[in-house]
Image (tube, rainbow, N blue to C red; front, top):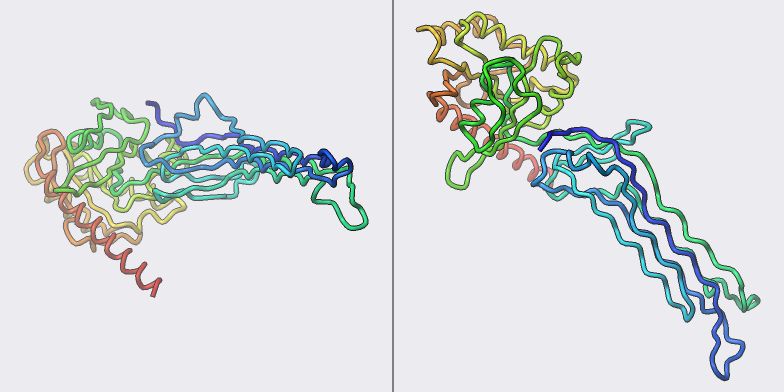
Amino acid sequence: MRFVDEVQIYVKGGDGGAGCVSFRREKYVPRGGPDGGDGGKGGDVVLQVNTHLNTLYHFRKKRRFVAGKGQAGRGKNQHGRGGADLVIEVPQGTLVKDASTGMVLADLASPEARYVVARGGTGGKGNARFATSTRQAPRHAQPGLPGEEKEVVLELKLMADIGLVGPPNAGKSTLLSRISSARPKIADYPFTTLTPNLGVVEVGPGETLVVADIPGLIEGAHLGAGMGIEFLRHIERTSVLLFMVDLSQGAEAAVDDFFTTCRELEGYPASLLEKPWLLAFNKVDAAGAGEFDRAVALVEAKGLPGSMSRGVGCGPFFAVSAVTGQGVDDLLRCAAGVVAALEDTEGEQGEEGVS
């Protein structure tokens, strides 16, 4: 399935049903009072998270969504039936924006999130509602109100525990295919990965991590080079950054790639460099002896960019081979520990807020 992370759609709530003009007509009651019922409310258009979705690709053919109309009222004070709501499923992490103003209307970040994006119109009142002591036979009723309508932009930001970042051809897709059931396209040339990929990794009994493979970032990515802006936004909601660079090209080149990637994250508006991070020097099996130690020393000597720190509880440097599996288990155990520590911290903050 093709990955799509931004679409524009038209949504309209159902129109309300018209009120009814009717009078009671029964045997022995030739001049009964008004008994016109109200029209039914139009249905709402609702956006609802489906955690099994990870793309907006299902909007490729249909981009117009209209909820059901309310039925008209009837005599004998019978109200019209309300229009059916239209529920549209979207992936977790979908941002809803007004297409004309760019204003964020909703952030569907939780698994249970739902948002009424277009409300149905109110049904009109029947003539029975307008009867008074001085006006006992009203001959008018209200029309139903039209439903809300608007153009909205759906923008997906992937939800993941680990965000794999680094230059093209560093081995991120190979690592994802080794540690999960995801099968991204892999080849020995840059920009093999053109769309983000998600994989679920089992790190223990009942313990899993969601890992996002972000396409390779090149210099100028935060300015849009290589579709950088489209890719960088998917890092915003990852809990931990896992940098991966190619050590087989030598320690100096690998470290340069690391700092280039950091600069791109630093140039993005969101505070990406404030996230906990790990650095994996990949292809250690093809690197020269001592290159890993030299690379770590170079990073330490240059100083960590931005507000990044080593306070992640383990690592943060790892020598791995995504092809042979060398060092991968240690990397995953550390990553799982960092994610668990973050969840514990967020839970404690939530409890303090409640108390």
